[in-house]
Structures are given as C-alpha cells and as structure tokens.
Amino acid sequence: MPASRAEHAPADGTAWFSLPDGGGRLQLWPQKAAFDPDAGLLLVADAHLGKAVSFRRLGVPVPEATTDEALARLDLLAAATGARGIVFLGDLLHSARAHAAGTIAALQTWRRRHAALDVTLVRGNHDRHAGDPPAALGVKVVDGPLRVGPWALLHQPGPVDGAFALAGHVHPCVVLGGRGGDRLRLPCFHFGRSGGVLPAFGPFTGMHALPRAPADRLYAVADGSAPRVIAVPAAAAGATNSA
Image (cartoon, rainbow, N blue to C red):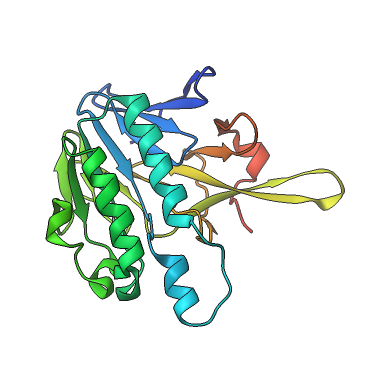
C-alpha cells in the first residue's frame, strides 16, 4: 500500500499523510506527534518520561526538566488540535525509576489539566519493565495492536492484516547529505507500504535511520525558530537512508 504525497500547512509547520484509498489521514506535527482528525486522536510514540531522572539516579549527568518539556508539548498539541484523546504507542515511562515522586507529580498535574482527554497506552518494552502508570492518572493500558479506524496501533513495527500499522520503538531519523561530506540527522516520520513509524516524542532519546524502500515516504522534523515537518525526496536522503 504506497503512501500518498504530502499536503503542507506552512502556518503551523505541519504536513499531511493520507492513505491512497482515502481511508485515513494524519496531520504530522513538528512536536513529533501525529493527529488523526477523523478520530480526534493524538498519536505519540516513545515519550520515555522519567528517563533523565532514571539516569541521574544511576549517577549519569544528564539534562533536567525533560519531563516538563515533554508535557508542555503535549499541552500545545492538545490545544492546537482539539484532540478528544491520546494514544501513546508504547514506552510512556522509561523505567521503574521513572515512578519518582517528582515525575509522577508532574504527570498528575498535567492529567488534571486534561481530565476530559481519553488517554490510552499501548504497552511497549519499557512499559513492561517500568510497570503500568499509577491508576490515579486514568490511563487505560492495553497490549497492541489496538485497532482504530484504518490503523493498527502498536509499539514495535510489524505488519497487521487488514490495517495500516502505526508504531514507534525504533526512534526513526533521516540522514541528509550536505556539501563537503556533511551529514545531518533529523527525527522523522517514516511511512512504508503497510505501516509507518513515528519519531520518538521524548526530548532525551537516540535515533535510528531505517532503510528506505523506493515507495517509502519520509517527513523530517526540522527544529529551530519555526519548527516544521518537511517531505524528504528520496534523492535527498539516498535510496537506503543509511547512516
């Protein structure tokens, strides 16, 4: 199932991905999340909340306030889209250490601001180690795939019969070549014939360049003063998108 071309909305920096049969569409946001306007759902992969505190508890010096930054982006997305719900495609919490009092308090404060949102977590590999979020957060937790319209929502990429699979897990990026051998790695949305992979939402995560087939569609997330999502021609990334 080949992906269609993108439609761009420069005012908010988003781009659109649509299934070729018109059965579904996604608005791709530079805050590294996708929005299904027909279902009213925000799709967020690999938030890894509490990752920084997990590393600091092991004595590793890492940035602070990454959870606050991620929750602020969720605030922005909820307001901009008018979403009725959020589905996290796995790895909401990074580890058992992410249940630290400060991290959970920040999540509870965020949840009170968005009490009307229907929030679902499709368990990922980190969630199985971290444990489900506290019941007080009102998060429904399921094992994937979760069927929503034309989509099958899961954590680890893989085909799902009769649906277009949307996943996370691998933190996709695109590698762009420049003059003098320069190479730039940007997080991206990567859509293939039967499924797509969303970029990692968490601000403190690595990235992985996936092989690019000729029919694949990649949309880079360009940060900066005017963040935006940009369709990447195959010639710009190379046929294989190799790192």
